[in-house]
Amino acid sequence: MYDIKTVKGKNGVYQNIRESLKKGQPDRFIIDGDYGGLTRELLDSEIARLERNGRSPTEIIAILGDGSIIYWP
Image (cartoon, rainbow, N blue to C red):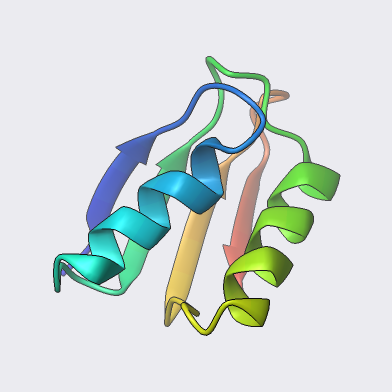
């Protein structure tokens, strides 16, 4: 099961995933960053921040602002 998130702003990925994991929701995410202009660099930075804080998701599928799709890990 995946949790679908639409993100806006610089900390959107981190905040949305962190809150979902705290609530015990699925640890697999589909991130729609198209509207918010999400970049690969920002996605990587937000994932690293989650890992540093012990809140690492199992899987992320992200739609970036340029329309490309990134699979993590």
